[in-house]
Image 1 (cartoon, rainbow over the protein chains, first blue to last red):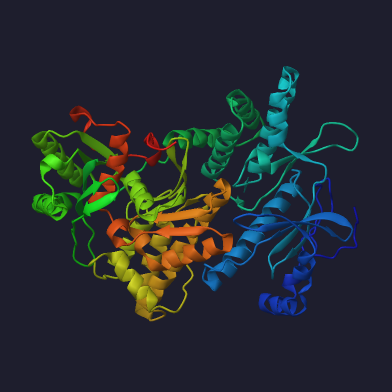
Image 2: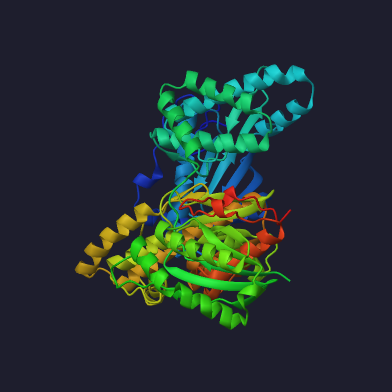
Length: 273
Length: 335
């Protein structure tokens, strides 16, 4: 991994997620307006770059590309303008979402949670350049294939659930709400030494910072709904995940209490008309 | 040939409609309109409905050119909605069902909207945005249920609009939402408001309290006009609705959107949804105010589907309920 030669904003080049001093932000040297104007004049580079990149998918929120950036496999997430919105609203929202996503990833990484490295952020065209986790598979695929094969995999699934619970506990203790927890948003990156694979969280597009047990409880509820609908007959496995979460988190009791409330609630409220 | 009569009165509209095999034979309706600055209370609304319901019933039969003997089934709104008005209408439905000797069917109001939307627009399997004064849900059909993918976690979008209309004291005739829409057309300044989308869900009570506060401050200081606030509120609320609809579409891989419910009449909402659909290559379906706004025919249509799949409601089960989730109903008429 190249070190020191990249001078971009918010770049965190330490793969192991250890604590690094944040580089001085360019934004403090100029006003935001000056910055944006300067960038707009010179920055046709990113759209040009994307024209040659491979479009992986177009979601509701952003387009995702695969490319090579300074010799490194990179994923580029582009939040494109939504024409149905009022331009002032669209600008503000897209900017805020980009910032929130980057902030959440960095906060996770600084706490030692595996997430893609942020190489570069372009705030004029709202593109985030992220580490491409090459050779990884989703937790979703792992569970699906483990369920199909013989029963020896039972222990590895239990171990996986335990690890997921631990990672989520750590994330919530950092007051990061992922916002879109599913087994497709968790990757297993094979370890180069051949040991246990690395559990990496991705897709922080809906994430935000919150200390409220309610928000954390809802975060887990989202995962539970996604987990149980994608992987049938895994209630016990998910219970194991929650037990591991409870044991690993310092603030878990309030969160689990809220999770139980949300489960029962089913959003029953008075509806009129 | 199956003829169903539907009774609807869960909020301030009382409507009775007759449907024969997908054809709307009649659909008269009355609206209880309160003075500017006031909302409608359950007891007053029920009183209004009681006063006009028999007249509307007569109109429905006359306009359809039918007699009670021609009816096969009496459908009514079981819920959700306001208690007193629901009871008023259910009472009449139960009475005529016994008088005419016809089976009774309790219908879910939200499903009434969906089935009417499907009938009128002929949409195949759309992602449904149901938006009204009482409900805001994003619904998609899956395995015998209308599943709720996203919804409001507090008040409905129409409720937010109606309550804002009260603050700026605009007329409730024909509806507060319609008048906000007309005023918004004259607005030009975009005022920034909170934007609260939480994944697939939305929240409106924060925006409401913010704009109620802003209305008092900004209008007295002359910073902006009431038209500007109407414009900004619509832009913000509708962007949120389009966003959660788009998320549900991406999740389900759907290429069709159907907007139902009173707020669905709003042309700006339809316009914005249209832009989103065009960019995704999806198709937008919407109905006009005859069917968007609560009406009896939609209850008749849902009742028609249910009746033909073999459902009836026994008298002892013909109660009403204020809370009735869309996904509680087993959709036996679709596979």
